[in-house]
Structure formats: structure tokens, C-alpha cells
Amino acid sequence: MTGELPSFDEIRELMVSRKPPLTARVVQERAEEPDRSASVIYDGVNAWYIDDGTTVELRPAEDRAVLIEEGEAERFGPGMDVYVHGWVKLSIDPRRMAYLEKASGSVVGREVLLGRDCWIVTVVGLKSDDEVEFTLHVDVESGVVVRTAREDLSGEVLEVRELRLGTVHVPER
Image 1 (tube, rainbow, N blue to C red):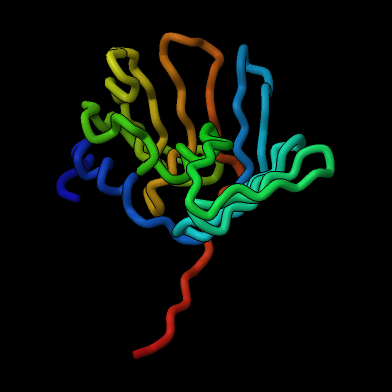
Image 2 (image 1 turned 180 degrees about the vertical axis):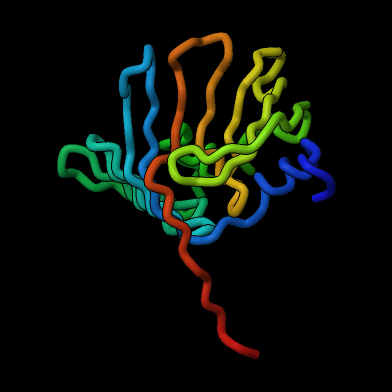
């Protein structure tokens, strides 16, 4: 990254980069009040454990998942697309943002938020045919979107709190 502030393209590369294993609590607020939250463990590749207090998702790979609701466990897959907890996964793994590649934006600053050093980025075009501006706080170290605020909906934010990054161990060759 060059100069004082990186380009939006450099931030987009950081956002879609491979993540380390991590733990976090994701909280969505509406009207400045908590609306929903989930505890998350992500292995940085494909495996997820997400508990939102109603549903537990255990996903060892993209094409299969175990969902536990009201004490009942159901397995889906292998070979099945199951969409659950997308609101949690988008901030932690921004590769899942369908229109990120086509979006335009600018880096407007840097600050510490929720204990993480973040780039502040304004982005337009994250939703299909939608020119709504989002303000993202992107973790400098990992590319996780620590805070997402939609500028046309005051008081509605999604935050990745208590973000803890792990390490990766691979066999020596």
C-alpha cells in the first residue's frame, strides 16, 4: 500500500484476502438498539460455528451443514447449498459480498474501533442496482469488516465485536 491512505482497490484486496481462524460476536443494531447477535468461530477456510441463540450452525464445508433448532439436529448435504447466517458471514468473509468487485469507493481515514485498527471506507454499489452509500470500518490486519453502516438508515449498523484472530499451523515440507 502506498502513501498515507491506500486506494479502494487495495482495501478491496485486503477484504477478500484469506482470513486467519478467528472468534467474534456479531451484533446488528436497529434504531441504535441491539436487534440480533451471534457468537462465531471461523477456521478461515470453510468451517463455521455460529450460535445466534435460536439456531446453531455447524458447517464443516461449504456444501454441508448441521443446523440445531429447538433441540433438533438436521444435516444438509453434502452437495447442497444451504444459506444460513449470511448477515454474520458477510462481514467476517467479505468475499461473500456479491457486488464488492463492481462497487466503487474511497478510503477516508483510519481509526481504532472496538479495539481494532481500521481503515474507514465509503462504498457505493454493494447492492444490485442500488446507489446507497455504506461506511465500512475494515480491520487493517485481517480485512474483516468490523463495522458496516448504511448511510440512508440512521442507527442501523452491523458490528464484529470481540474479534480475536488466531494463527495457522501447517506441516513443514
